[in-house]
Amino acid sequence: MLDFGNFYQLIANKHPQNDLSSWLEILPAQLATWQKENLDSRFSHWLNSIEHLPSVTTPLRLDLLHGVSAQTEPALSTGEQQRIEKLLKTMLPWRKGPFDLHGVYIDAEWRSDLKWDRLLPHIDDLTGKTVLDVGCNSGYHLWRMVGAGAKLAVGIDPMALFLCQFEAVRKLLGNDQRAHLLPLGIEELPKLEAFDMVFSMGVLYHRRSPLDHLLQLKNQLVKGGQLVLETLVIEGDEHQALMPGDRYAQMRNVYFIPSVPTMINWLQKCGFGDVKMVDLSTTNQNEQRTTAWSTEQSLTDFLDPNDASKTIEGYPAPMRAVFTAKK
Image (cartoon, one colour):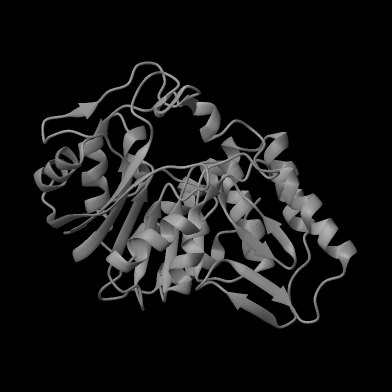
């Protein structure tokens, strides 16, 4: 069983700007229920792997500004590195990264550092901020938010594998308490209105009701807080959105992919102001690919082999946009 007591202590004290204390009225029960429902053999196996990772107590060379990397002084032996790698590979696949931990390089399917580099120049200063990352996967961006100055970075993602990957990385970073991952979906959060910034990256197109998702995100922001949203988009005007059939790029749960003007219109209809599209990029094989840490199919397998501008189903190939907006 995982212990979330440190997080409960962090949010117990009321803060005039970022008061998360009311969350304690429902959060412990939610997480207790989640753990009871996820007591299968895989989860227990992953927890056992975390337990056997070395506890890092010696001084660290820790860099969360330029990546997510840590090194003990002196460096771990080759045997110790091999042991860490073997334990971390019990948690395959690693979708988001990379992580460089004591000589073990987790080359995840997604180069999430490239996305971070694209959006960082366009968002508010993170210094001293309390931030929420919705659908945070293994928590790579949580650590980059801390590296950019965030006081507290909270991620939510209901997948047990991602929680275990996050806790494994945290242990190898010296049990850093500035970032926390909770196994919840955004629909399980009360209206907290306590986060200076809310990130939703790669989530919107997986929601059956995109406007409801935007309102749920808005409910977590303080007045004047910033939303940072990244989503798949298509070319088109303010009236266009793609509703794929059974699959899009082999993903089953893709419901709506808006055009850029449609996405701006959705944000404005939900009451956001100062809406901007700050980055637009086509996903390429440098950013998403099969690796030794994620051996399943990846972008190359999802595109038409004769026309890389289309998915294997014939839809426009993945193009992603980053939007910022204020509450």
